[in-house]
Image (cartoon, rainbow, N blue to C red; front, side, top):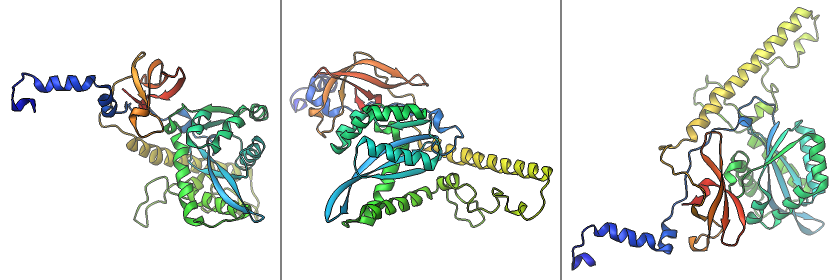
Length: 351
Protein backbone atom coordinates (compact mmCIF):
# COMPACT_ATOMS: atom_id res chain seq x y z
CA UNK A 1 0.00 0.00 0.00
CA UNK A 2 2.92 2.37 0.71
CA UNK A 3 4.50 1.66 -2.67
CA UNK A 4 1.33 2.79 -4.44
CA UNK A 5 2.20 6.35 -3.40
CA UNK A 6 5.88 6.35 -2.43
CA UNK A 7 9.07 4.50 -3.27
CA UNK A 8 11.13 3.78 -0.16
CA UNK A 9 14.69 2.48 -0.64
CA UNK A 10 15.07 -0.90 1.07
CA UNK A 11 11.39 -0.77 1.99
CA UNK A 12 11.00 -4.53 2.19
CA UNK A 13 13.83 -4.81 4.73
CA UNK A 14 12.25 -2.02 6.76
CA UNK A 15 8.89 -3.80 6.85
CA UNK A 16 10.59 -7.00 8.04
CA UNK A 17 12.28 -5.11 10.88
CA UNK A 18 8.94 -3.69 12.02
CA UNK A 19 7.28 -7.12 11.92
CA UNK A 20 10.17 -8.70 13.82
CA UNK A 21 9.69 -6.21 16.65
CA UNK A 22 6.06 -7.31 17.11
CA UNK A 23 6.04 -9.94 19.88
CA UNK A 24 2.73 -11.50 18.79
CA UNK A 25 3.86 -11.81 15.17
CA UNK A 26 7.18 -13.25 16.29
CA UNK A 27 5.48 -15.92 18.40
CA UNK A 28 3.34 -17.08 15.48
CA UNK A 29 6.23 -17.15 13.01
CA UNK A 30 8.71 -18.97 15.22
CA UNK A 31 9.78 -22.47 14.27
CA UNK A 32 10.95 -25.17 16.67
CA UNK A 33 14.67 -25.48 17.18
CA UNK A 34 16.11 -28.43 15.31
CA UNK A 35 19.09 -30.55 16.06
CA UNK A 36 21.12 -33.21 14.30
CA UNK A 37 19.92 -36.70 15.11
CA UNK A 38 22.16 -38.20 17.75
CA UNK A 39 23.92 -41.52 17.48
CA UNK A 40 22.28 -44.59 18.90
CA UNK A 41 23.05 -45.08 22.59
CA UNK A 42 25.42 -47.85 23.58
CA UNK A 43 22.61 -49.79 25.25
CA UNK A 44 21.01 -50.44 21.84
CA UNK A 45 24.20 -51.58 20.12
CA UNK A 46 25.39 -54.33 22.45
CA UNK A 47 24.56 -57.99 21.90
CA UNK A 48 22.72 -58.34 25.19
CA UNK A 49 20.16 -61.03 26.03
CA UNK A 50 16.53 -60.03 25.43
CA UNK A 51 15.16 -57.49 27.93
CA UNK A 52 18.53 -56.93 29.57
CA UNK A 53 18.02 -53.25 28.63
CA UNK A 54 14.31 -52.42 28.70
CA UNK A 55 11.99 -49.46 28.35
CA UNK A 56 8.83 -49.16 30.42
CA UNK A 57 5.62 -47.32 29.65
CA UNK A 58 2.05 -47.27 30.92
CA UNK A 59 -1.08 -47.21 28.76
CA UNK A 60 -4.77 -47.10 29.45
CA UNK A 61 -7.23 -47.07 30.99
CA UNK A 62 -9.08 -50.03 29.49
CA UNK A 63 -12.63 -50.73 30.64
CA UNK A 64 -13.53 -54.27 31.68
CA UNK A 65 -16.51 -56.01 33.28
CA UNK A 66 -16.38 -57.36 36.83
CA UNK A 67 -19.53 -58.61 38.59
CA UNK A 68 -21.86 -56.43 36.51
CA UNK A 69 -19.63 -53.41 37.19
CA UNK A 70 -17.42 -51.50 34.80
CA UNK A 71 -13.88 -50.95 36.09
CA UNK A 72 -10.62 -49.57 34.77
CA UNK A 73 -7.47 -51.53 34.03
CA UNK A 74 -4.05 -50.54 32.72
CA UNK A 75 -1.27 -52.37 30.97
CA UNK A 76 2.47 -51.93 31.24
CA UNK A 77 4.62 -52.44 28.17
CA UNK A 78 8.22 -53.59 28.56
CA UNK A 79 10.28 -53.13 25.39
CA UNK A 80 13.71 -54.62 24.74
CA UNK A 81 16.10 -51.93 23.55
CA UNK A 82 18.16 -54.40 21.48
CA UNK A 83 15.68 -56.86 19.95
CA UNK A 84 12.59 -54.56 20.06
CA UNK A 85 10.54 -57.34 21.58
CA UNK A 86 7.69 -56.43 23.92
CA UNK A 87 6.17 -57.90 27.08
CA UNK A 88 2.69 -56.85 28.23
CA UNK A 89 1.33 -57.05 31.77
CA UNK A 90 -2.25 -56.18 32.69
CA UNK A 91 -2.80 -54.55 36.10
CA UNK A 92 -6.08 -53.75 37.80
CA UNK A 93 -4.85 -50.55 39.43
CA UNK A 94 -1.93 -48.13 39.48
CA UNK A 95 -0.89 -48.89 43.05
CA UNK A 96 2.69 -49.70 43.97
CA UNK A 97 1.70 -53.21 45.01
CA UNK A 98 0.11 -54.11 41.67
CA UNK A 99 2.94 -52.54 39.69
CA UNK A 100 5.60 -54.46 41.63
CA UNK A 101 3.69 -57.72 41.10
CA UNK A 102 3.62 -57.02 37.35
CA UNK A 103 7.32 -56.15 37.41
CA UNK A 104 8.12 -59.37 39.28
CA UNK A 105 6.16 -61.39 36.69
CA UNK A 106 8.12 -59.68 33.93
CA UNK A 107 11.51 -60.50 35.51
CA UNK A 108 10.50 -64.09 36.28
CA UNK A 109 9.35 -64.81 32.72
CA UNK A 110 11.92 -62.81 30.74
CA UNK A 111 15.03 -63.13 32.90
CA UNK A 112 17.21 -60.56 34.60
CA UNK A 113 16.97 -56.89 33.78
CA UNK A 114 19.84 -54.50 34.51
CA UNK A 115 18.66 -51.14 33.09
CA UNK A 116 15.13 -49.75 32.76
CA UNK A 117 14.23 -46.54 30.91
CA UNK A 118 10.96 -44.73 31.57
CA UNK A 119 9.30 -41.36 31.18
CA UNK A 120 9.90 -38.65 33.72
CA UNK A 121 7.15 -38.70 36.32
CA UNK A 122 6.26 -35.07 35.61
CA UNK A 123 5.62 -35.75 31.95
CA UNK A 124 2.86 -38.19 32.88
CA UNK A 125 0.89 -35.35 34.45
CA UNK A 126 0.53 -33.64 31.09
CA UNK A 127 -0.57 -36.85 29.38
CA UNK A 128 -3.30 -38.09 31.68
CA UNK A 129 -4.50 -37.56 35.23
CA UNK A 130 -4.76 -41.31 35.72
CA UNK A 131 -1.03 -41.74 35.06
CA UNK A 132 -0.14 -39.33 37.88
CA UNK A 133 -0.17 -42.38 40.14
CA UNK A 134 3.02 -43.54 38.45
CA UNK A 135 4.95 -40.71 40.12
CA UNK A 136 3.75 -41.99 43.50
CA UNK A 137 4.97 -45.49 42.63
CA UNK A 138 8.46 -44.21 41.82
CA UNK A 139 8.67 -42.38 45.15
CA UNK A 140 7.40 -45.30 47.20
CA UNK A 141 9.99 -46.83 49.55
CA UNK A 142 8.81 -50.36 48.76
CA UNK A 143 9.50 -49.80 45.08
CA UNK A 144 12.97 -48.34 45.75
CA UNK A 145 13.89 -51.25 48.00
CA UNK A 146 12.84 -53.76 45.35
CA UNK A 147 14.86 -52.04 42.61
CA UNK A 148 17.98 -51.74 44.78
CA UNK A 149 17.79 -55.37 45.90
CA UNK A 150 17.63 -56.54 42.28
CA UNK A 151 20.53 -54.32 41.23
CA UNK A 152 18.42 -52.57 38.56
CA UNK A 153 19.44 -49.13 37.32
CA UNK A 154 16.40 -46.91 36.66
CA UNK A 155 16.96 -44.10 34.13
CA UNK A 156 14.53 -41.28 33.35
CA UNK A 157 14.34 -39.53 30.02
CA UNK A 158 14.25 -35.74 29.77
CA UNK A 159 10.98 -34.07 30.70
CA UNK A 160 8.80 -32.84 27.81
CA UNK A 161 10.79 -34.98 25.36
CA UNK A 162 8.92 -38.27 24.79
CA UNK A 163 11.01 -39.02 21.68
CA UNK A 164 13.95 -39.73 24.00
CA UNK A 165 12.10 -42.96 24.77
CA UNK A 166 11.08 -43.55 21.19
CA UNK A 167 12.10 -47.21 21.15
CA UNK A 168 9.24 -48.03 23.53
CA UNK A 169 6.84 -45.12 22.89
CA UNK A 170 6.41 -46.18 19.26
CA UNK A 171 5.35 -49.69 20.23
CA UNK A 172 2.55 -48.41 22.46
CA UNK A 173 0.70 -47.44 19.28
CA UNK A 174 1.39 -50.88 17.81
CA UNK A 175 -0.45 -52.40 20.78
CA UNK A 176 -3.30 -49.88 21.00
CA UNK A 177 -4.31 -50.13 17.34
CA UNK A 178 -5.09 -53.87 17.31
CA UNK A 179 -6.59 -53.57 20.79
CA UNK A 180 -9.12 -50.99 19.55
CA UNK A 181 -9.94 -53.07 16.48
CA UNK A 182 -10.48 -56.23 18.51
CA UNK A 183 -12.42 -54.76 21.43
CA UNK A 184 -14.47 -52.03 19.79
CA UNK A 185 -17.22 -51.33 22.30
CA UNK A 186 -17.13 -54.79 23.87
CA UNK A 187 -16.63 -55.19 27.62
CA UNK A 188 -14.55 -58.24 28.49
CA UNK A 189 -13.67 -59.75 31.81
CA UNK A 190 -10.19 -59.30 33.31
CA UNK A 191 -9.14 -62.81 32.29
CA UNK A 192 -10.39 -62.36 28.73
CA UNK A 193 -8.59 -59.04 28.47
CA UNK A 194 -5.36 -60.64 29.71
CA UNK A 195 -5.66 -63.33 27.03
CA UNK A 196 -6.18 -60.74 24.29
CA UNK A 197 -3.11 -58.81 25.42
CA UNK A 198 -0.92 -61.94 25.36
CA UNK A 199 -2.11 -62.73 21.83
CA UNK A 200 -1.37 -59.15 20.71
CA UNK A 201 2.07 -59.48 22.30
CA UNK A 202 2.75 -62.53 20.15
CA UNK A 203 1.60 -60.77 16.97
CA UNK A 204 3.71 -57.66 17.62
CA UNK A 205 6.75 -59.79 18.41
CA UNK A 206 6.27 -61.58 15.08
CA UNK A 207 6.59 -58.37 13.04
CA UNK A 208 9.60 -58.16 10.66
CA UNK A 209 12.50 -55.98 11.74
CA UNK A 210 14.34 -56.28 8.42
CA UNK A 211 13.34 -56.07 4.77
CA UNK A 212 10.72 -58.57 3.61
CA UNK A 213 11.81 -59.94 0.23
CA UNK A 214 9.35 -61.01 -2.49
CA UNK A 215 11.41 -63.96 -3.69
CA UNK A 216 10.75 -67.41 -2.27
CA UNK A 217 14.44 -68.25 -2.10
CA UNK A 218 15.30 -65.11 -0.13
CA UNK A 219 16.02 -65.51 3.61
CA UNK A 220 13.24 -64.90 6.11
CA UNK A 221 13.12 -61.49 7.78
CA UNK A 222 14.44 -61.07 11.29
CA UNK A 223 11.75 -60.76 14.00
CA UNK A 224 11.86 -60.17 17.77
CA UNK A 225 10.38 -63.64 18.20
CA UNK A 226 13.58 -65.13 16.77
CA UNK A 227 15.44 -63.80 19.81
CA UNK A 228 12.75 -64.68 22.35
CA UNK A 229 12.15 -68.22 21.01
CA UNK A 230 15.59 -68.94 19.62
CA UNK A 231 15.67 -72.11 17.57
CA UNK A 232 12.14 -73.25 18.41
CA UNK A 233 10.83 -73.30 14.82
CA UNK A 234 14.02 -73.81 12.86
CA UNK A 235 15.21 -77.41 13.01
CA UNK A 236 18.60 -76.47 11.58
CA UNK A 237 19.64 -75.08 14.95
CA UNK A 238 21.00 -77.94 17.08
CA UNK A 239 19.88 -76.63 20.45
CA UNK A 240 18.19 -79.63 22.03
CA UNK A 241 20.72 -82.30 20.94
CA UNK A 242 17.84 -84.64 20.21
CA UNK A 243 19.91 -86.57 17.67
CA UNK A 244 22.52 -87.33 20.36
CA UNK A 245 20.15 -88.90 22.87
CA UNK A 246 19.55 -92.17 21.04
CA UNK A 247 23.20 -92.89 20.28
CA UNK A 248 26.47 -92.84 22.11
CA UNK A 249 28.22 -89.47 22.29
CA UNK A 250 31.88 -88.87 22.68
CA UNK A 251 33.60 -85.85 24.13
CA UNK A 252 34.86 -84.84 20.68
CA UNK A 253 31.38 -84.95 19.10
CA UNK A 254 29.88 -82.81 21.86
CA UNK A 255 32.64 -80.22 21.55
CA UNK A 256 32.19 -80.14 17.77
CA UNK A 257 28.42 -79.71 18.14
CA UNK A 258 28.88 -76.92 20.68
CA UNK A 259 31.26 -75.05 18.37
CA UNK A 260 28.75 -75.38 15.57
CA UNK A 261 26.03 -73.95 17.79
CA UNK A 262 28.24 -70.99 18.76
CA UNK A 263 29.01 -70.31 15.09
CA UNK A 264 25.30 -70.23 14.23
CA UNK A 265 24.66 -67.81 17.09
CA UNK A 266 27.39 -65.48 15.82
CA UNK A 267 25.87 -65.53 12.33
CA UNK A 268 22.52 -64.68 13.89
CA UNK A 269 23.89 -61.55 15.57
CA UNK A 270 25.78 -60.58 12.40
CA UNK A 271 22.47 -60.62 10.54
CA UNK A 272 20.96 -58.41 13.24
CA UNK A 273 23.86 -55.96 13.01
CA UNK A 274 24.16 -55.77 9.23
CA UNK A 275 20.46 -55.71 8.32
CA UNK A 276 18.68 -54.13 11.29
CA UNK A 277 21.17 -51.57 12.62
CA UNK A 278 22.17 -50.34 9.18
CA UNK A 279 18.51 -49.74 8.32
CA UNK A 280 18.16 -47.49 11.37
CA UNK A 281 20.91 -45.28 9.97
CA UNK A 282 18.92 -44.57 6.80
CA UNK A 283 15.75 -43.72 8.74
CA UNK A 284 17.34 -41.17 11.10
CA UNK A 285 18.97 -38.84 8.60
CA UNK A 286 18.95 -35.06 8.14
CA UNK A 287 19.47 -33.43 4.74
CA UNK A 288 21.48 -30.53 6.18
CA UNK A 289 23.16 -31.78 9.39
CA UNK A 290 25.24 -28.59 9.88
CA UNK A 291 22.48 -26.02 9.34
CA UNK A 292 20.96 -26.09 12.82
CA UNK A 293 21.54 -23.31 15.32
CA UNK A 294 22.65 -24.27 18.82
CA UNK A 295 20.81 -22.82 21.81
CA UNK A 296 22.88 -20.88 24.34
CA UNK A 297 22.60 -19.77 27.93
CA UNK A 298 20.43 -16.63 28.45
CA UNK A 299 18.57 -17.19 25.15
CA UNK A 300 14.92 -16.17 25.35
CA UNK A 301 12.82 -19.13 24.24
CA UNK A 302 9.19 -20.11 23.90
CA UNK A 303 8.53 -23.45 25.61
CA UNK A 304 5.94 -25.51 23.81
CA UNK A 305 2.92 -26.31 25.96
CA UNK A 306 -0.15 -28.50 25.72
CA UNK A 307 -2.21 -25.75 24.06
CA UNK A 308 -2.15 -25.33 20.27
CA UNK A 309 -2.04 -21.54 20.53
CA UNK A 310 1.51 -20.24 20.76
CA UNK A 311 0.26 -17.16 22.65
CA UNK A 312 -0.49 -19.41 25.64
CA UNK A 313 3.00 -20.91 25.76
CA UNK A 314 5.43 -19.76 28.46
CA UNK A 315 8.38 -17.52 27.75
CA UNK A 316 11.62 -18.39 29.49
CA UNK A 317 15.37 -18.07 29.51
CA UNK A 318 17.88 -20.90 29.23
CA UNK A 319 19.81 -21.31 32.48
CA UNK A 320 21.91 -24.38 31.65
CA UNK A 321 22.62 -26.56 28.62
CA UNK A 322 23.53 -30.25 28.42
CA UNK A 323 25.72 -31.62 25.66
CA UNK A 324 25.57 -35.09 24.17
CA UNK A 325 28.44 -37.37 23.24
CA UNK A 326 28.74 -35.66 19.87
CA UNK A 327 29.10 -32.17 21.41
CA UNK A 328 25.66 -30.93 20.33
CA UNK A 329 23.15 -29.48 22.80
CA UNK A 330 20.61 -32.18 23.61
CA UNK A 331 18.72 -30.72 26.59
CA UNK A 332 18.58 -27.54 28.62
CA UNK A 333 17.21 -26.08 31.84
CA UNK A 334 14.65 -23.30 31.29
CA UNK A 335 13.35 -20.71 33.74
CA UNK A 336 9.86 -19.48 32.89
CA UNK A 337 8.02 -16.36 34.01
CA UNK A 338 6.38 -18.30 36.80
CA UNK A 339 9.79 -18.92 38.30
CA UNK A 340 9.68 -22.67 37.78
CA UNK A 341 12.45 -24.66 36.15
CA UNK A 342 11.83 -27.38 33.64
CA UNK A 343 14.32 -29.60 31.90
CA UNK A 344 13.36 -30.00 28.27
CA UNK A 345 14.88 -31.16 25.03
CA UNK A 346 16.62 -28.67 22.76
CA UNK A 347 14.45 -29.63 19.80
CA UNK A 348 11.31 -28.74 21.75
CA UNK A 349 12.18 -25.04 22.04
CA UNK A 350 11.40 -22.22 19.68
CA UNK A 351 14.20 -19.74 19.26
